[in-house]
Length: 427
View 1 (spheres, rainbow, N blue to C red):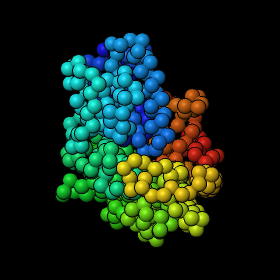
View 2: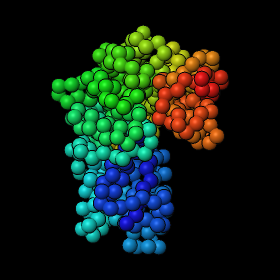
View 3: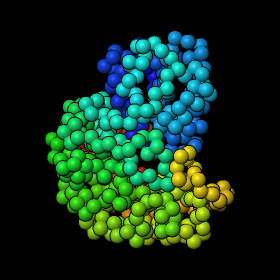
View 4: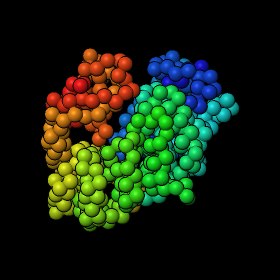
């Protein structure tokens, strides 16, 4: 029996697809990259923005056409959009066999074996992933330390489709990382919708960082996504004190306006965010800080947007992931008057992107002539004659190397820089 899987959305979705692959492998399934050759076709979906849903629905419709030619195939839709749409997916695309929420996929094999069809199961919200680990296929691996979210930011659908926050026990996280090390993994990224709020009742996220950084065989530790309200002094100290913990952080700002931040229910002010940035850079001057920005949130004025531009200039982020507001069902913001014209949203988005890219390039070019420690990942996708890897601060570096360097940390002298990548030579 062969399976084919497509994954849309965040790193957590990619991790979940890895869990599904692990479950299927244990049941004797083998992967294929050709849906026509698969007995089981799966689509892991995202619901964070309407565009992601439309894209997934298009692919599901296409794959249902593949099944139509061979009715013996099983077509499964799971993940956040599955939880959000539920039975509507089967109404729109009747050839879909199973619709499973982001925590319901452990029952997949049982459902298949029961030979029932048109099953919608989107009610489970207590799965933590304990005892089930994806099989890593590179020197890097993601490890989910929690699932769900308790923050209920007014624009975000995640708490509604992934449920309330559930934290994995420390021992199980450690066991998974040791499992990854046995497959040759050198770098771990700890995952959570609100990763730095992790606790097992005794230990907090700072304790988790210290524990993971001491696991034999792990050269680097990263984590995402962090919420500013949960970035404690203890976490900053743990980042500073433990060499394997990378000096980089993704710290979503969303808006530079205090009024908009209140409407977003973000639970911090611009002033508090700037204090966190100051603390991070005081402890680790070389730290790389990236962020998320939403423009065009309901009632956002030119003054509000100017506050966002101002904080971008003040912080000088190394990367910005920016989006215009897209109302999500069931969220508080969906009930607000979406009064910022689409054209204004697009103009503001373009301004953020242009400014963010310009600053990121300027920041990168300050590294020309420096020597960077790079964990070699493999051959560069766009130029297979070269190799690529990441610096401690999360910057992509492309340089000449050899196969034996993969999985090791080498020193690279930086000779050129673009917005998103550095170029250099190994020394």
